Image (cartoon, rainbow, N blue to C red; front, side, top):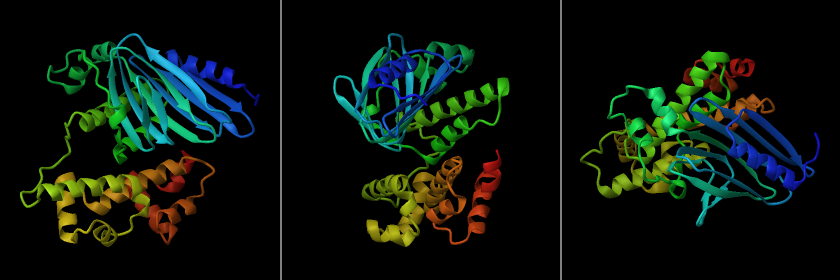
Length: 320
């Protein structure tokens, strides 16, 4: 692979960021540096999946549009810095939803780091045409019709297991042609719904808090959930959490279930299985090493749990 100079890299990346086209960009910089950006343009959205690894100099990229669009942004690895009026950092495993009447920003990729993002640019007018005669109360349509900016880069939220699964399903779509397009369209709509639920307080899956929970209890349980989102690989038991957060096991189990419609350990397992699925889609990753990392002493137990979660075994995933 030819080595590219920094100015060549910046020119090529800026071009792919700013234009709606299907393109795969793979550039080498320095000894170990690699830039890989995949752009896919559909009727009413564009998807960008970018990875920057071990570049030898800081690089600055510019992107923007003069027409309204919705930006769904997911930080999968590392931290991205957006330079608008102020510097905004989006940290690893977080996401943001933004409606932008017009937008221009600079982003900086730091040297000797690894960053990966998944970004969807939705075009409101084109999406509304796809919806056609949807109910006027449809929150997707209402968000597309807004005129005021809606920006959450500075209040990015932790990516939930269901969102990770949507991203993985999109990146590893098993279909081609018209069927593949329909499959991906539905995933993007699902991601849009997930983000609206997160950022506009329309939590369709949320349960009412029990009258037996105080405001302090609810706040603590939300803190525990945030901790689980970020440290799920480190969690092995309820007792570990009760000691860390000074909460009794009854309140933890029943309070978490009432607030989030899921048991604590099931929530942790969902995170772990989605992590396993992501890792196993990388050919160089050893299956038994993933099982060990998730705390399974026997591979068969891991394989059984994986198949129960996804409907196929780790070995079958490798054959897809």
